[in-house]
Length: 568
Image (tube, rainbow, N blue to C red):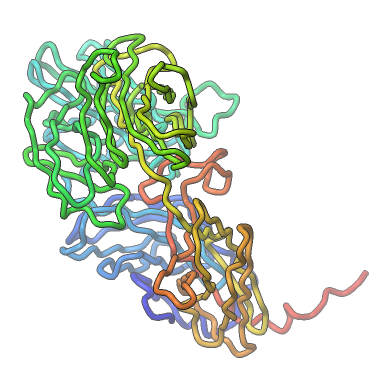
């Protein structure tokens, strides 16, 4: 096996020394269930899909997570070491015919419960005694899952459901009912994904019921609740303190920033301020997971290359406006309907700038627009949307001078949660290698192709050579120069006639000729294509890309398989 393969359950290696099964098939895996495991535990994890013949091999991308097959077809025993940190890891199932697509397993040290049926009726819910808690469940066919929690007057219940983030084909809904069955709150998506989130402040103490249900995604012509064995979810319930967002919404690279924290709904932190340490942020990070003392949750927030400011209300005169340094960012709020926020910045002739607003990306309801004006308020450029609902604009000034960037609501709406972060930066040269597939197979004595897309941006320079690393014995690939023009390139995989059957990960890299820069080729799990489970793709996932494609070297065919079928 190739050096560096992690967490692979070797469960019947004799199969790889023999011949391929005529009735076997490449494993098809839609989900693992349960999906969440705790450090220091042993778990029975079932494959939602088909692995025939059994047993197969479950690969987990972590050196301290082991797995073993059980005597029940499709079920593995997953052993998680005590020192495994919280977070998602990649998995896939393989056999001597090939491997499944990548799926997730999530390690969590949070309190964890399993959903228990029957709990369809709000009058007979599953009782949750302790908060905060993460409940892992599954929305089966036309399923409704109900959970009862007891709250005191003035407490804020925060309920967040993760399903699409976990590759579940369900458009989920959350609602909160009081003891009489009256709906007090509901949500069908959190603004960032199709997964819902609800914040509800209790007016009177009592027992409240949180219900989870959903509709098939992609949608079909049936108007009814959806669900199936693939629709796994995690429901996080808390009564605080839970942070909704900090201001500023980003942290500067390499220095400190003071942030004020805001909760969900009417939950506040009374102006609590927390100092964020700059050394937490490395040069490689575009975002960082932040946690604050006394707060139950963490948030992933952007990392900027300049100052991170917070908007100060000012008049309309250019001299009175907040000035945003370049590079730099400012966080603000469209407080009232029809408001427009204006910020001054300095620019130089022919020096391209990038303006990026993040709001919908955080799950806020603001559908923002931005425009560039000169000092006389003449519009010079405008954007409503970028690659998402948030606007992005590249602009090159024709003269030196001070200019104004304006942000507003496309729907002319505002409010306390119409929050945004505006970043102004210089464009950076970049180089991207994207794999067209994540799973490959090859027969002894044959060849296969690894296709990649090469994209350079903003004048990226340098000569690079493509190489494949981690191939098992008996396989080779000739390095090739990266062409100067962007586009698709193809590397050849060549297997010797005596190559041994095996399963392994490998890596494709671009190495700089005469330099030290290297770039791994990645496969995009989250995309706007149709190859990751649903039309238009999953926009956000707990892991959105990886650089560990899979290779199966197939066993030799039986002699009977090599013969051509008789002609009739």
